[in-house]
Length: 76
Image (cartoon, rainbow, N blue to C red; front, top):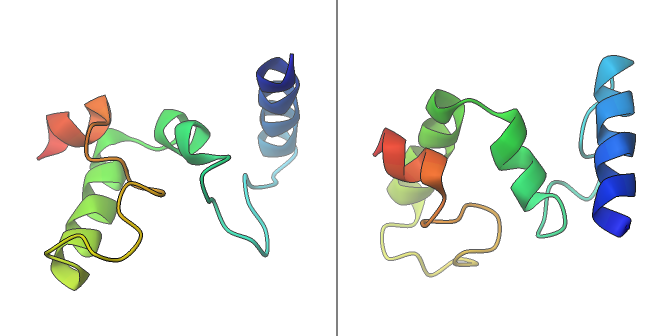
């Protein structure tokens, strides 16, 4: 039930003008929610920045930006 509760909390926070993350950032726990909430363009931009700064994907590979995400694959 954790995923259901998390989604309800995220939905409510966003409806009230809040965000998905705070001082700890997105991280692995909110990674899927980020992909659901951001457009393919936004996810593609994040992926492009990651690629530009870390072309060998050495810094925390697959931690936040998944290279297998459907939204990323569509925007590449």
